[in-house]
Figure 1: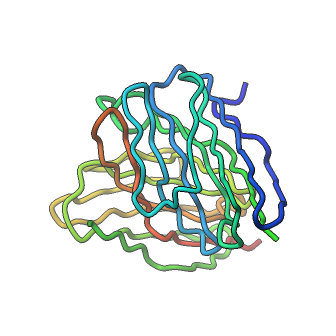
Figure 2: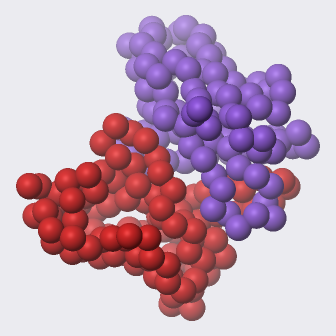
Figure 3: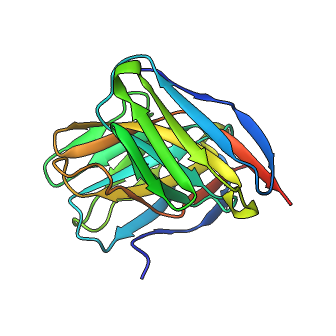
Length: 115
Length: 111
């Protein structure tokens, strides 16, 4: 079973559309994340979320919003897509902060192309 | 914020060669990790190495926290080692654990 799974793996859409990327983890972790990897392979945290708090990277436009129906899911909604949103989006999960830090698991990524 | 610098940015190796990848930090960090992103995009956690040395097969990592750097050694490289290697440090707080990544070293191992 895949620990962290994302769908869709590939998404091509037009500017101005609204789209969602789904993420599910079956590890029983408390915290989930979204990371963005740009065309230069630079990885950057977008959100982290557990049942207590949503932490948003201040550089993320408010067109991006995470939605968590339950602890095992953290979906990413993007409104009014722009060309610059084209990137690979990685979902991840981890146990709480008291662990060693070696417990972050990444999904396989969702390749978003905005045309 | 703390800056992360990785070197070299690109590296081409003949299969069987050894290599050392470096990660420098502008300030002390408590949690350092190394990741490998394979050519298919999958991110794999290699080491959690806040200090000291760890080994896993042909890979080993050393972090000298007082000197603010970490090294990843790859011995007897194989074509399957190709990909991008990232170091990252983690910041804990408010029930989450956020990673800040370096820009990566792109490794190409040729037969």
